[in-house]
Length: 414
Image 1 (tube, rainbow, N blue to C red):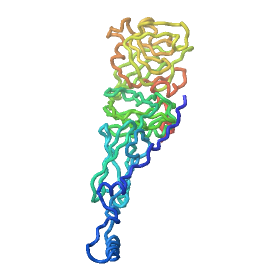
Image 2 (cartoon, rainbow, N blue to C red):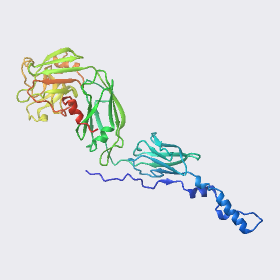
Image 3 (cartoon, helix red, strand yellow):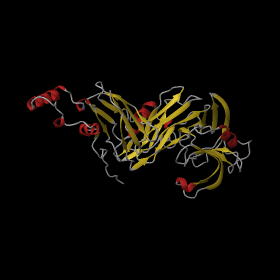
Image 4 (cartoon, helix red, strand yellow):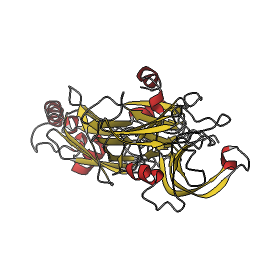
């Protein structure tokens, strides 16, 4: 639905402290009222008065005149331009701009010290007080209130703040409104890592922006996501509202490789093999995606229905144990208690998932499904090869690792 255009121009002209008002306030008498001496001719007195008027400088002529934009008293000022303060007949000693939310607007003076400009724009929906002190004069104040945006958007991010994930976890942001100005939005979001590594954003769509380094995160990395989206215009008339920093951490490195030719999964942690499990993958009619996949959800037990993945009524299992999602389209690595143990390691019989032997109820610690689930976390990498299927779409789940670094960087808007 379209949004009407709203002008960002101030509703009132910039406020000036007028010279005439100052004269009235100081009680300065007009020249015609000057009192003359009691002796001498009227002509002489008039000449003396004129000479006096010529020789005495006007006090008002040296009074600094200050102007603030947006104008003093504006109630619905725009927030897409900086605050400006100018002075004539003088120079500026200091300018302070304070919001009722406790924020301040830093700024800088020009070389002549006659104009001050804020470094950033004011926030929307905020009342600001501007305190201006010209050189050699008293402080003067003005105030204005910025309007609130008509329509807004936010970005929902993965992983959760404060969480610990595996080395394959990207920072993925899904926006509540389609983004037209991708560059403006991406510039307002930064992802930094400790230890430091280059992190680049990639747009999968106009509602999804992911960030990752060239290779998997190093174990123990601290990641900080900085959102500076407040008042960023993502599309015409639609503005961001988030202004926050969140951190999360990367845990140990665990990468599991599923070879559906040998029907075996090898689990390696920090480069060392810690387990091997016989598995069963997708059959010839329902092959498993190949490529690099990242665990994005985990369920100790969950219901799986074939109708939700376009397979009609082929199956409906209410208590699938130890299910870990690999794709948005429905690929999981999960426990399987309904197939014969002879299947695992020998036949690919599933509808596309990777199955491990398990027990009904998800409570038997001796079975492979239980063991693998307990050793895993969100963000762990699962690589599938020799499945007979093409590489998974990088946007299908958190699977951007299937793009080369050059391909990934090509999807950045900055």
